[in-house]
Image (tube, rainbow, N blue to C red):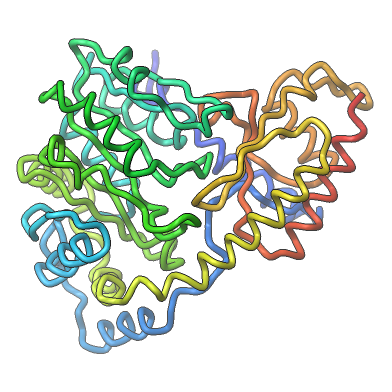
Length: 397
């Protein structure tokens, strides 16, 4: 007799977290592993935000808040959306959650039911598919290769839409590719989706401030679709607050109310102290994020140059986030000491064993011809890791 619910067996473990776990296990045994698997800024939360949290503790701001976040915070987020993104969401359209992942899950669960289709550009963030599975929906993947900078074309989206399509879900800047959609590209996508008034759009903008080509554009500013756009954001990446667990959305009122209802039965509100920290973060000038962004750009350029010296590793130049997603099929069929490389997963296991560098297989993001690695670590470690990768890859014949 099967004990667990079928929904559990349908889910896959996050390969990002799995590789991070394997790295920790090896480190615990004394192995010198460099982990480039997790997307976590190696910076500290700005002091002004930490001081706001300390004050909240001292002021005994330690009671339940509204499920969707206390009013002043939602008003601050509303102003941030307008100031930084030219998005019009009032406080009733804001829902604060325990991380952007919960925000996405709330939104998907509020829209998608059994048999509904969700169109997702591929490569995609690992949790998109699993969240749709939890909602018992179907993922319709639209492939974008390295030759197109991993960005889907409007005609591809049109071809993927079915009578059952209820949602289009994408990220920009993108995890895992670092690709950033321009205003013109978003307008072209919106022109297609405008023809289908029953399709909602989830725009995951968690990497908004880690953008090397200027201000990130939001599809929610485009009049033809703005009333159907759910904009997801959070504090983890821009403010180095991964452990604080605060995400938020701006959404049509009926979606915001549904997400409030769902969240009220699962977690209720996120930490009141984290909410106070978030309020301060929302009021800060975006320039506070520039030093971290500039550091990531410097690291990106360093790693990109080193990738050019590795035979067979093909990559684009990411415009945002802090990842590379190189194509590695050159190594398939090659071997070393009896280990044969058949795909990106094999290559990641080989490199973890041989180079002591942890990457994430591209299969986790929709294509096992690729691997993903983060450059959210020091330049010294990045140089060391890239040299190890080059040496180990050269052994494959």
